[in-house]
Image 1 (cartoon, rainbow, N blue to C red):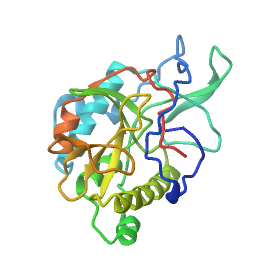
Image 2 (image 1 turned 90 degrees about the vertical axis):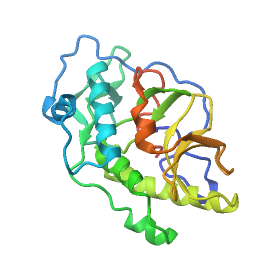
Image 3 (image 1 turned 120 degrees about the vertical axis):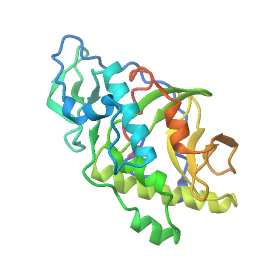
Image 4 (image 1 turned 30 degrees about the horizontal axis):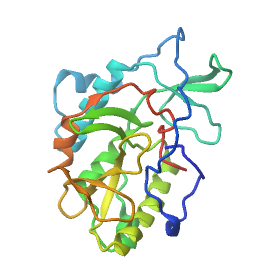
Length: 246
């Protein structure tokens, strides 16, 4: 999510979804030619399951395929210092003069093992989290859940993966102060809310949380269960939630 400084100090952790006002609508592609890349998603649409995929990776891949089918035209403000494997074609000027680039979620060739974070926190990261963040390079994807709107967080590039670890260390420190079990965030809720969704590391349950406090409630018994109940929503609802805060 592009919402502030490029780095977050762990001691000043405010959560992955600090509330802020909407900044306006994102640029739509309009008449710009679509560049489809069906090879990245075709297997997901057939319902065939790749044997090496975990339940999380499989369910998430189905959602991504549905998302791209529903909203094939995705753009992001172009930043020459923040490139991504997701970018498609060359940047161009939108109707408002802002330079943007087309993008699509891209399957990752390998997943992060989170070994550095595990060593720092002296615990094993839940495999569902490894599968979630290790499956795709992507900007944020908007969705409707049974309990309301969510903005799924993804990694835009390798540098984003490193900053995710930095943010999780800050999150872990806040959890220790609140005497709450460690969890890993993966989604924001409403635009003007600091509430976020996380996976409880010990149990794999999906929790609704507020930064620095104990979990509010359990939303789903597992991440695959939660992801399986999502419906794609317009990418222009919260345009600043494109990549993890940097």
